[in-house]
Image (cartoon, rainbow, N blue to C red; front, side, top):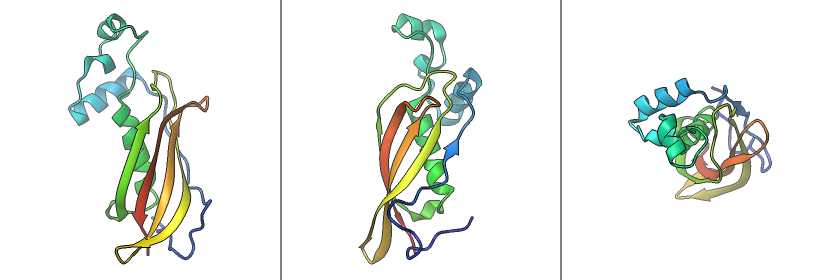
Length: 139
């Protein structure tokens, strides 16, 4: 991993996008097992339909994990200082998540050089499913 330097990073810089395979039932089952989140709305089509949904859909925290993966593909996990995420839509089966990040601020806090990054996770149609921001320490 080529770790960026504070003096090289500019407001407006884009992180390399993270585009993932389409969400399928296997993805949901594997995530449920890994996370311990076995909420039936995500894995049981009968339950989802009884709840008024056409089918199961992705765990919101799965997409949040993809955003974290975007960040840790740019900097080591130890550089993370804060991550805040807001869910804005449901990620349906067949959706192909695309995670992006943009540097929106450079500053110093607690003796560290830091960067604020605007985060977004959208599907292949450009529909935003998560928005957020992260603050990372960078040398």
